[in-house]
Amino acid sequence: MAEQEGEKSFAPTEKRKKDAAKNGDVLRSKELATAVGVLVGAVWLKFAGPWLFDAMQDTLRASFTLDRAAIEDFTPNKLLIGALVAVLPPVFVLGAIVLASSVFSQIGLSDGRWNMGNLAPKASRINPMSGLKRMFGTQGLI
Image (cartoon, rainbow, N blue to C red):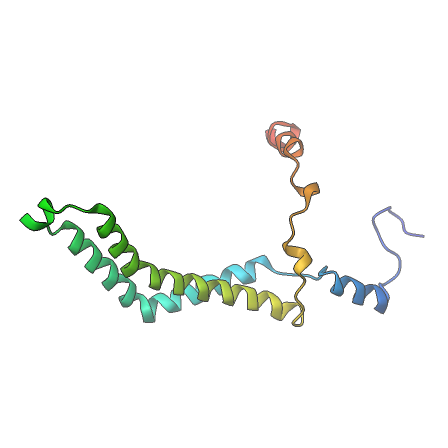
């Protein structure tokens, strides 16, 4: 028998290992996903950063360059849409690349398994009372 209640005395069987992997209960490194995302983002900024910065520079230049026609025919929604069309594509590409690299780094750790059940919110983890107890209780004083 185990000495303590939480301590297991036997190694898990193959069936338990397979069931745990099937349910998505495998070891994952959050730091690995963060590191991969930061690294991929930095490499993207190194090579495709001029695309983003040129788009931002052109947008700012167009926004702050005013002539008489721009003042008389002032349409802020047209300026905003033009700015979004110029700047959002590089930002979306950066976000998609960082997201994909983070997801693939986690899938690589789990031998290519993907469990959609892990994306569902768990009501047991969203308990405001336990959060308040943690912030204002004895643990929060430390």
